[in-house]
Structures are given as C-alpha cells and as structure tokens.
Image (tube, rainbow, N blue to C red; front, top):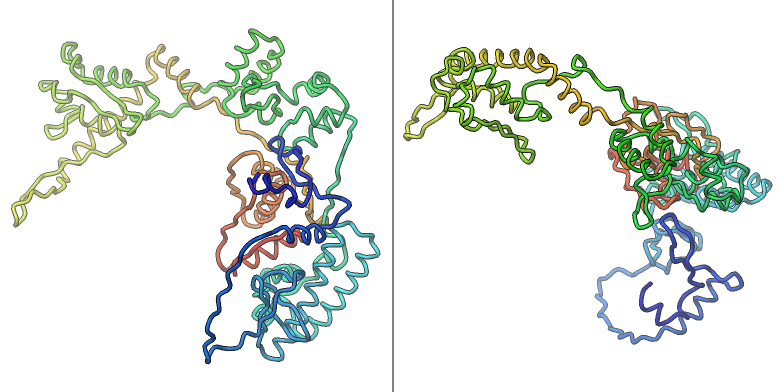
Length: 549
C-alpha cells in the first residue's frame, strides 16, 4: 500500500482487508455498507491541506472566447451530450460546444438518445432488474431507433458514422444492427427484444467432486483443492479418491515449490510423457500412490518409431559426431594412423559442423577422386553437406584495381555436386545397416523427438459471464478459448468463417475476469477496427472497450 494511506488511514474510503484472489491473498478496499462514497469524499476533501500559488496570465486581445463548460460527472469522456439545448463534446474535465450543420445536429441528438437508452438497458441487465423494467426500456429503444432510422437511415451509414464516430459509444450503437458482408441490413440486434448479458451465478455448494472440479477450473483456471473441499464439504483425500484418474498428484509438488499439487488429466497426460514417466517411477519408489501416474503415463506414451519410420539425412544434428566420423572413415577407407588426426565437431551454440584435419589424408584416391575433386576433397564435401550447403567452386580473378574477385566455376561445381550426391546416397545406405547402431539411434531419436503428446483442451466447464446468452459458441470455439486460457500461447489457424473473432473476444473477457491479465490489446487491420468493435459488443454488450478510430 502507498505510504500516504498508511500514515493517513482516514483518507481510505473503506476498510482494507485481505481477500482470496486468483493468485492468493490480495489486499482490497471493502466499501462501508452504511456510508455513501459521496459523503466520504466530502469529508476526505476537507482533510486535504495544501498551498496553491495562483498565477495571473495576460489575456491576448485576439484570443477566442472560451465557450467550454465544466464537465458533468455523468457524461462519459469523449462523448456527446446536450446541455441547455446545445450539443457539447466532453474532453477530460471540459465540455466544448459543437458547431455542425442542422442535419448533423439532429443526427447527433437522435443517436445521443439511443445511446443513453442502450446504456440504461445494459445497466438494468447487469444489475438484474426485473423483466418489466427491461421490457419497458426495450420498447423505448425500439421506438427511438425506428424513428431515427426512418429519417436518417442505418446507424452504420456513412453519414451517421461521420456525425457520431467521435463518440466513444459509437461502436456500441453500430452493434445494434446486424448486417451482411456487403453492409445491408438483416435485422435488429438481440438487445432490442432479449436479455443479452449473462449474469454471474455464484455457486456455494455442489454435490459431487466432478462438479467441484468443473467450477474450480472455470473460476480459478486450476485445481484449487481447498476451494473444492469448501464446495463439497469433503476432505482432500475423499476428493482425490473420487477423482482418481481424472486428476493426478503432481510428483514435482512440494510445499516450497510453485508447482500445483494436483493437475487435471488433460494437462498431466500431455507434454513430454517420457520425462514425466521417469519422474513418476522415481516418486513411486517412495510413495505407492504414484503408481496410478505410472500406469496412466505408460498407456499414453507415444509408440516408438522404427528405423523405417524415421527420416534422417547427413547433417541431422541429433546424430552423434562419433557416428559421422565412423561413416566418413568407412566410406573413405581412412588409414587408422591418419584417422587419429581427423575429428568431427558440432557446436550447439552456432549450429555449425566442422571437420578438423581435412587435409591430412592427401594420398587417398577416394577422398580426391571417388567422393571429391582436387578443388574440394571428400572431407570438405562432407563438411558442406553436414551444414546443409551445396558445394560451390570459385576461381579468383583480378579486377582493374588489382582486387581479387570470386567467379563461380560452373563445370567444377557441377562435378563436385555430383560427388556430394554420392556421399548423401552412401550415408542413407549406411546409417541403418548395422544392428547395434540402428537400435541405439532409434532409441536416441524416440527419446529426443517422440516423447511429446499434444494436450487436448476442453472448454465445456467455462461460464462466460457477461456474454450474450442468445449467441451460442460452437464446440471448437469453446475448446479454442480453453486453449488460450490454459495453453500460454495459441495460434488460431482456423479457416475463414470459423469464428476466430468471437474466440479471441471471449478469451480476453475470461482472462480479465479470472485475473490472468489486466488489459488485452487486439491489433487488427485499420479498416476492420470498427467492425471488430461492433462484433465485440454484440458478444459482450456491457464490455468497456477502447477503439482506435
């Protein structure tokens, strides 16, 4: 907490308490139930003591008269309003008069009325007013909209956009009209006739551990065992027993670690299964309760690939340098005493292969004839192949300034590349020929690249508080939202029309509600900003968003 409020607790408009948050205990200021905020602010202002030095500024004779007025607290910033029959536009603490044509003025006044009615309707739904209040406000909204559209056309028309798009609520008004891809009117939005804001329902108890698990994932995005115990009245042991095979005790958990104690099956039985299986086997040696982890992980372990299913080329970085040396010496028939001076190295930092001692085997016909040339020998040819480069032979000629300039020798290059292909073919025949080498490399490959099982996300338990209940997301959309919430990073590689916009909007709203983020930023093409905002508010009518225009 800021030290000022520690020293001046009477300036806090409520009572400071520690409450349960998404990441543990969180300090919060709880409002006093028996006192209004306006009354507390009035008292607090009287306690502020400061010195203000006033300066007088010379007024220029030709300076325009300031016609602005102080902003009304109930007028949103960057919005139009009507005061004394005139239109004003609020910018921060002042409201400036707006000078427009009579027609534009009438358009603005009409949309102000629709906007205020929509805001009232959203407030009624958010605060769960009775149906009679909402129906009366919807009737009023229909009357206002019908009268306006009959005279001035669609809110989304170019003329109305030009008149009102500076208002921060214009995108909200645009969402009242459902249009086709060509901008033609289809129908009014659901807000005119239905409740469009899903209320948050607080559940305090459930009958089963499965229901408690769904609530924990929906409200906490994790398995909060204490929360689940409070919902069911059961002990941790009882819940763990009821959900055996659905949740798993995490072998990495300890009281001092940041690891979660329990993980859902879709999370635990995904990722690097081989690594998790080794951890579970080690844990099971001391605690038999981890035997179920071992059994479940063994069942989902990816099937080992055989040599015929593994594609390998000369230059694959998972092949040990010792095997490359063995291939090279067998291919060239390198004498033993010469091989001591030739070594293959691979740098994990640069990703480069290097063959040390390429020039030692000078009298080997295979190095300079069968698999190389007098310009590029076989060892250099293999080095280039390991680095996935085509060999090229250059001649150097002097220019008019005496500087040497490389010129590609096409004939020698063609010959050298033919030798390079022979080496590639020889490696493909050699790599799996020896039984011991085949078994060892297959095991190495499977351990490195065939241990990961993708997670299958399921979003059936998500609640989507505040979403328009008249819009039903498809199963793949719900699962994609779960992927965004739990996966950390997500690529929505859907086809056009699959509903990516609603997926991103719902994921942003849920992330905010669950405390996973403070603000979401959407980067979209310039010509789609207002369309995006309109679709956003169709899905979440009460959302408070900022749109660049």
